Figure 1 (cartoon, rainbow, N blue to C red):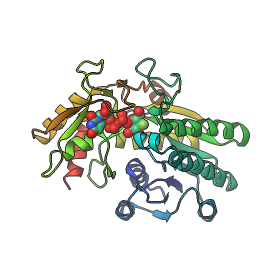
Figure 2 (tube, protein in one colour; figure 1 turned 30 degrees about the vertical axis):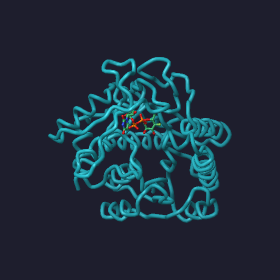
Figure 3 (cartoon, protein in one colour; figure 1 turned 60 degrees about the horizontal axis):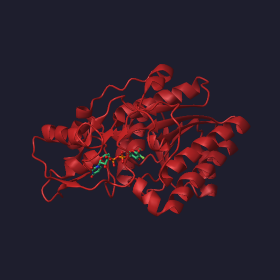
Length: 325
Ligand code: UFG
């Protein structure tokens, strides 16, 4: 059985679905602070899923859940993930993301569970020194969100040396899209991400899409990001679990496509996919946005055998279908 923390959230739920489709038993532990019970209820029809509503900072309950179930490995998504909020309210991020993970690792070790796949982020690299970013790039986060994820990576290294805890840290770039059969999708409240925000502007009563900055040093003045499809991303987690199951050592990988798209390119693609003229206004730059973030994913391909195969257009298409339900 695989324990998925944060399995009621956007990326976690796509992994849960992929695991269930493979016939894997899944235990989701989620406090539902940002995830949705509707997602869990929906996922139950696809396989053997048990759900515990709990917080990682409730150590006693967490430890009980781990000791009452036969868990082979953990995939850890549960975290707050809004960069801007982390700057304004860092204690929320350090307490939930860092302290919560320390509790999780303690409960795992207490129950002799020593394999974990962890949601890390491109935000651990901070302002890029060169691009595309490989795993050797210096990790120097520029916001508390990125700091929490980097601290956890360091904690996992220490726990590996001391306790033999094996981890795979997956550093996501910009995750996009929804399940291609529209069973689940992206559901954040409030929504801050680019693609859902553009798509929401196509609906009656939707707000004018706000484009943050068109004066960056990029080919059209807007920020470049590497959009990785959520199903491709889920697949990388399955490969990471197999890697650990086969005795793989602690490791870390970038998950992106090696290709960047500007905000304007994403916007145009959304107009193409929806067939609509989308209202847009140019706003000042958003604080903390680097101009260019593109992954070098060679290592994940070579070591995990991962091969992302969905395009940006695929991601926008699946996201639009999901938003339209
Ligand atoms: N953008 C807009 N308008 C919007 C939303 C976004 O113009 O309404 C722009 C942003 O300014 C940025 C780009 O679209 O240039 C992408 O923004 P997102 O908010 O979709 O994604 P980020 O690149 O800011 O953040 C993502 C993850 C974070 C992670 C970060 C790593 O969502 O969790 O990458 O830097 F920390």
